[in-house]
Image (cartoon, rainbow, N blue to C red; front, side, top):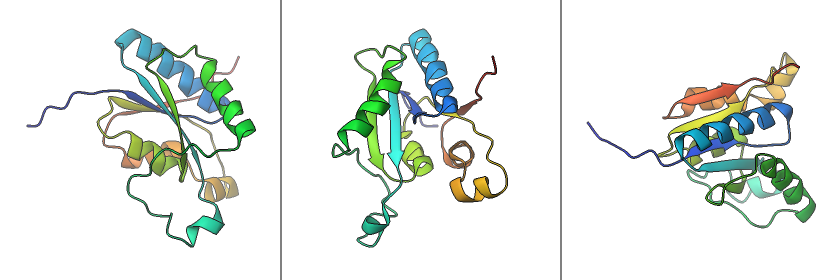
Length: 148
């Protein structure tokens, strides 16, 4: 039996209410356990890059070349949980589900929000939480948006 030290909490992050709920849950859990957070924001691969072989990378690397306004919007979402210095936010050009799962190697758990796409929405947008539940090798916490 192999023992691995769990090093972080990976949370999928975008600007949606469900993602904000997942980030808040992950921040509370991180503060209780002392584990750092790696927030993963992934943007789908533009069709112009798909033709040059960006699709299907096994372990995408974080990117820095993101539109400044777009980056600031996501950073503001991350800042809502008053991140500790060891927490980080990484941007990827990849489909969100695979990016979160790739980042979760060696993590204690993955935290994602849940959105109920129905019908055509599920076909068009897929489900990051469903992808992570089916592919992650670590526990996955799917956090619903709380109705007030």
